Figure (cartoon, rainbow, N blue to C red):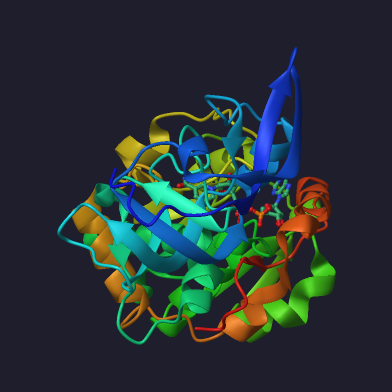
Length: 339
Ligand SMILES: NC(=O)c1ccc[n+]([C@@H]2O[C@H](COP(=O)([O-])OP(=O)(O)OC[C@H]3O[C@@H](n4cnc5c(N)ncnc54)[C@H](OP(=O)(O)O)[C@@H]3O)[C@@H](O)[C@H]2O)c1
């Protein structure tokens, strides 16, 4: 890395482990404290995802090295780059790729990453909007992209979105409904009914009142599904999606297990599509981000973003997220800029 124009000290939210106990705090770091990379970014915004909450609290084994700056998303302006694809002043974003997992992440005023992870900010998208979308919106868009590549169409019937009030869920509802799908939201927060309707959900189901049945095949009612829950919910989806429908498996907020049979696959032609935003190849990653600025542009970003916080407020957001009280998206303001 070119060490001319050295970056001075900057603030970062770093996660430590001491004899099995994970803790995180705001610290002053220098560039030499960060993992190597070709591109140095002055961060403007980051965001909070479920994975960030698991990582920083130690309630999920997400981090693969310690200490590590948290944050799987960042958007900002290139400060310096030894890779010719980027120049100082370029607006860029990074989501996933190991950021905030095994490479120092986005909860930092300065972020240094490999050039292959960096996506130019799509035209018409602000740095704030990029992080309002972040991994959550990108994952929802990637799910729809994969489902439609596999033949999903509004004529097949309503698409059910689980974990509906979460970050991914809100985007899935908004993007699907904007593309002409009927959307059913499955939520544990029935008080959020009108908010979910505002995002585009035509109907809202209470996940606590759901009769899931136990037969290998139950009445087919969904054209497709975007699942953030996993576990019993995902098993129920396999039993209830109509012939040739797609289930995009994104999350495991309700469990990592999956107990089902092959019947939905061999008798109904149902497809189970895996969504891994962190490992999405660069070409597909760039294309989906372009779509998020054009034909898959969210129309309800203001409603989906429920708060903007500073780095010092992260612990409180993590607690609310892990206790199921969080709704929508939290953007993290890192620099005093609105661009
Ligand atoms: N595969 C990927 O690339 C990828 C990318 C992003 C996120 N994810 C995963 O996707 C999931 C959602 O992420 P997120 O950022 O949207 O998280 P989030 O904002 O915390 O939302 C999770 C939602 O899941 C629902 N939920 C909570 N506990 C549940 C339970 N026990 N059973 C069923 N539903 C439950 C809640 O919604 P309701 O109260 O409305 O039901 C909650 O708001 C997480 O598991 C996350 O790790 C995966």
